[in-house]
Length: 399
Image (cartoon, rainbow, N blue to C red; front, side, top):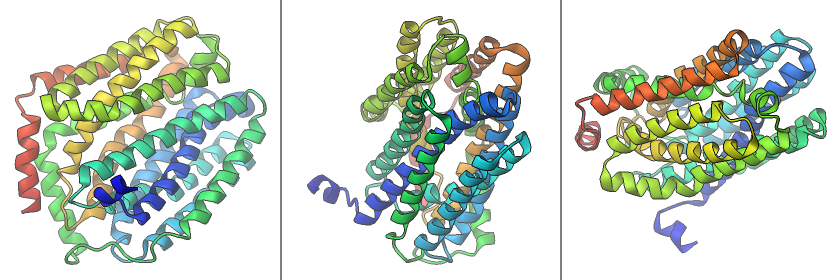
């Protein structure tokens, strides 16, 4: 508790972190495990339709995020999160009634509306004095939540798909109940900045970071291309049960979580640019080797390297992104940056699902590996000093 006080980790931030964990636990379970399995095995749709459903989910999520930033200056945290989680429960219940592809896509869209607010609210409540530590807490909570959701759900999918789903609905109600304890206040800066002026400020920041935009979009596209195909790849190509697939995910995700803080410290010490480059190269190699695996042993090995690669990239990348959020427009700032990164999240599932449908799992994973190899080369050759740029631009942003 003394450590939490030292870094000004308030009770409110802890409450937000708990709700964030539960929301991302459900989202990870739904998007990574339930929708691919339910769509392919129960509804009988192909991976392309599954990809469309996941893409629509993230499309709606990211569109709503921009407006959430605006609403945070006008309505209380509790009201926004509370209403959002009610809508997410409606989306989940619609999934249970989905009898065809279109209803599944609609349910995914409604669910995307509901889960959108919590992440922006959490980021907006991070203090300037302890930004790195508090953001690290939120990102760890997010990573553990979205990673453990499919892991836990996969074990239950081997037993009963319907029971697994209703267990997630119970967790959704729990997150909604806990949201009632959040602060009943608005998020405001030192002064209220008109929305049009906020957009002008943010447009200026986006122009400044234009050389970073390929990385923001391509990396999320490549990563999410794997989402609609991995359960089927694990089952059909590796011969794994959903439970064994969970073991692979536990080890890979565990490697990411355990190494996240050390990698962040090393990137501060040696330079964020090269940690991004090394992380992208390692990610490309890991995905390629995973596509060549034929049993659980090699799959575990390369999933571990994949987790380490992710941990290498994420702290440096997010520290860089944080420097572009104006201090007087946090809500809209994080909303816009999340929406830019979300373009890749929207494209990835439909591209991955379609490629897998027509080319197969292996070629789809090779395309993903090639995208991360391109990013490594792009940022390795780019005459741009990440660390210096971050310090310079942070001063100009906060000026």
